[in-house]
Length: 259
Image (cartoon, rainbow, N blue to C red):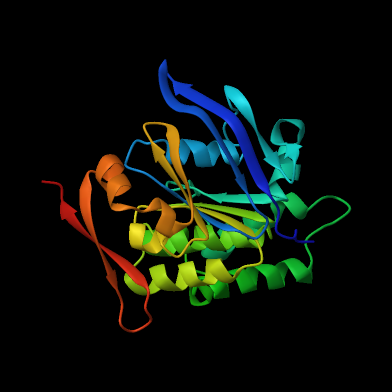
């Protein structure tokens, strides 16, 4: 019932809000199974691009493709069976439990011919367990903290069993333990993943990065190729020093205010 990893493509994407251009002719191709990081300063258009890729917004120019098929020719149900989006400010009704919220992720797969089953129960339970929220299943939504709600939103996306998972700032509101565990878990999923990230050290672990600046995709490639001192200075307005962690030889960036 779940999809395998899929390709995600876009070409010539444009979007404006109240006459102000937000995205300018953005194009990219994300390979099946790739973990792709989308980075850029505040206001660069990351959330808008994520919503366009998910089919939540309709492009004012260009197109989005799932496994080569234009999203514009697909129904919302077809898209939801293939792709799940976790937004920064995802809305959820207050008068439900955490489990109820995750069960909503199964909606694209249900129909009169395919009612709720024990398989759905198992998928929901497994999704809650994956984000360390199994013990909160019966808690009312209104009693959950911001970090707990974020983990439930991720569990709901996992319950969709998508081939493509889009996460807009997935570590928002999470403590450092859950930031690391969620990112490690997501990286191990057999899906194509797109992460919009603020933490550039977290972005270093992605397969490839795309850098948005003033609505344009200004760099695309592997993290060491993209996160150069020159780009960090020009796009993020910081100076950077690159260090090596003696524990695992991982590359780490230390930031300094631009002089």
